[in-house]
Length: 463
Ligand SMILES: *Cc1c(COP(=O)(O)O)cnc(C)c1O
Image: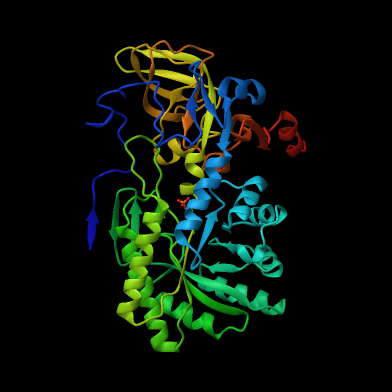
């Protein structure tokens, strides 16, 4: 079976595809609330503000490039997910999207659980007071040390990703005199990309254990035999930046039929299913993401219906949104350095950051928006490519966008929806100093991850 809604996903040609940006936006000074954090507005003076503080003041105080995260928006989105799923489900924030101790505290206060996928993320979560039983540990190659730490601190779930890991976790738990609650991650044969998905028998990827050929059923058989493990459910994560719920429907149907097989063979009904994350956000005004309450309703209806058909009790559902919570809550603030018009082609606008603070454009051909935020302008729109300062021609932040033609060095521009997978994937390429993350709320700004310094670089380089 194969379906697709409408063609989308990454663009590979180095030209504007037909129909894309056929016209610049009607008003270059407007800020589309779909792509900007909740409290972002234009002040009477024409500058942009977030959490009641104007970006010129933020740039003066914290420098550029820098990420500014709207704390009220983060909390509101976390709460919306929590409320939408209610008491019979669990929301795990996917820490890999962006994790810091402040974020862990916000999640804790808003009643969310947390996914981690490395010892470093686990340490961060624990050090900020996330109760271990509300943490799930993921990853396709967890080290023995990581497993040992996770089991001994008592994480709520370890998500088993391979046959080797079933045995490894069981041994470690037994040695520590524990019985570890686990899920088995299966690949259901759904490849989901933004507006389309393909359902296949197999999935060609490193994560999980295939449902196909009875692999997952064999993993369950083995896990159920081991004293160190308490198998509580099945996990599936089908992709990222997904808008089409139909991929989740296929995944849920296939996971529920595995639950039915398990009941028939072993006489046990596993009490939990985790449908993963991957819900899309608006990076540009063309994207139309679903609200958490629509997603919760759709997922719970699918699972309830499939379980009724199979004669199973409805399991407790978990979801793992990362991007959908943190992505829209932050923007990256840059200062314009140089401007190079290439006649008849486009204008290259260089900023003081680049692929070291946002690798997604280079890595996935991701699309972003951009706006002039230190002032308004009535100038004509010009087609720009926003690029960084790295020694690499693929160092692109925003591939195609419009900015006012009077843009000048020293102007501040901001790229919205950079809360997810930007700081968390930031690098020191060209010995760039990774930017700070500043939380802004109710007229107060506070550094939650400080800017790296040259001393930080030299400290790692032991000569
Ligand atoms: C990456 C990932 C997520 C989060 O994905 P988003 O696209 O940020 O929602 C959730 N669960 C698992 C297992 C993941 O690998």
